[in-house]
Length: 302
Image (cartoon, rainbow, N blue to C red; front, top):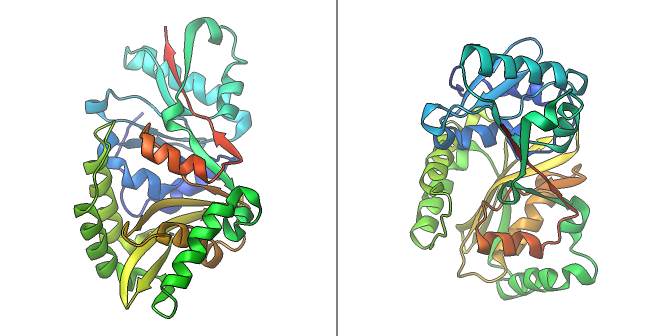
């Protein structure tokens, strides 16, 4: 197996493998992989059957879940295991496996005796009902809707939601950098700097990514923006980046809602990615009442 770094032109190829079976992990979206490429030192291998990302040498050279058809999972896993054990002379430790992949490899004789499975709560993706986030109807979302209404009332005549595109990147980038200056971070995994580098790579190469963008202007100035992507095979919107001026109450709630309304009308579910084990982020994501978590597992060869 020969591994190489992603280029900005690999998106279409990557997504063709992600579409081979229903996968709900945020890592199935190319823009997610590209944002985190430097942090994980990501490389990839592909053939006619599967595509697999691996962390680079500085992160231990561990494979992530291969993207393939469901019926091919046991065969693909056995191929990867043989390469790690016999060619690389390393135990196979695989990261970010979903439930379907795990259940499939558990059918391989001897798997349970040979591998330890670890459930990684910090990596769980949060999955929401799209319609509920768009309407904020019912008791569950009463406080969220009040925040939105309060923002709209206070700034009536002074705010505007706009669908953005690559022509807006300079003002998005300027706002993002200003937002960064005013934020205190909990950085449990020392990942913030790498994430910022990845986000700026997205800004610089905007035209290469199949993303959707939206922003909120207050008195003519951009004060919030969001970037997401869509997986039509599973009718899922993925929210990769969402930033707002924290000094404007209700603005985060407003862009959360309006971005879905304007950019993802056909979405049935929303993946707002993981919380990285950050307490504040976890509290915020839980407050929107996910309908489920997309569980992720790591496996370690004994």
